[in-house]
Length: 402
Image (cartoon, rainbow, N blue to C red; front, side, top):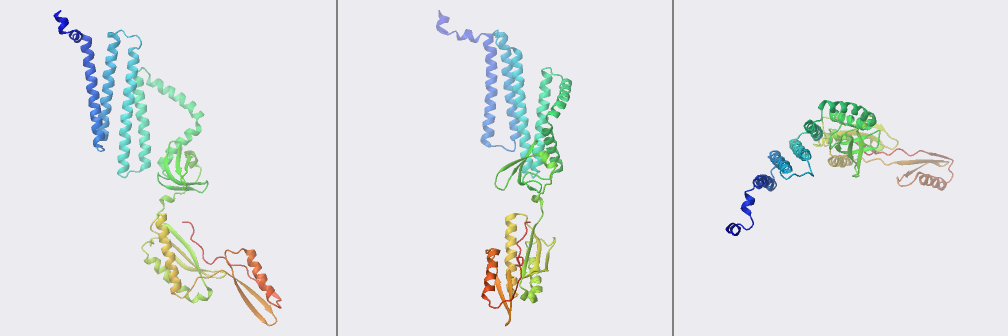
């Protein structure tokens, strides 16, 4: 009666049970391990550690794997102690190995990703870092798979034999996939372009910035922000231009002066050459040409050819604009002017030669210009002979695409 009053629920008897003690200790160990895991995880996230991120993640992975191991051991003991028939010890072991393998792979993948990020931040090539990361992940996955396969009784030699026979069959069935894969490997070793490069293929309508080089395809972002996925095998059969690796951008243009300014051409050429040589944005180690090079139909043409130091498009446009504005100043400073495209109409009558000059407006069609000439012919009385010269080419050409 006294025992009932002092322990009405039989707690002392429960605590004296060896099974309760055994599983209580196991539960306590498991809870303690999980408590440590969440404490470390909270500290890592709170402090936002980056320097020791790899070590902290490795520790967390180890703690989690240890917790899975403890839980697995006690579940196997519970099968015997409580005569559980629904699940078997083998099922628990397989589940344990799968979970530990997944934790190990995830931890190692995190370490590889962290190393990749740190190397890129230190200035390593982004393309190389990503390719090496993918290779390491494949190696890690295969090693873990083989290790756990041996644990479950899978023969390594048998797997290799099966892999050889299966590889031949898969090779015939997926020739295009393998072709793209090996082409991706060759892209890595030959390095015709890297991630971030602007590339262009004259053979195909392919132009844009390389965003990703994968095992099967390469992702290119076009200049209108559309993703373009190119099979890697295609790069082995087309030519690829890589303007992203150019060292300079070119200024290539031609201006035309009037024929009545022929005595000023030499001075204009010398002044333009001097201006370019003194321009800090022009690369004097590259070719620099300024020459009077052509007698046009209505102009004396001067060629201007040089390279800027910058390769950035916006900076190149600014440098080119500066050069063009200074050329205009030089031409006007020397008392010369740019030639206009004109058409000359000569009328011969009995009273003498009459010369009519008609300016062509680029906005007016050739048919309208011919109509203007016809009107001039009709308005001139006694005309007996008309000789109309064809329109000359534009006196000033815009710069070619660098």
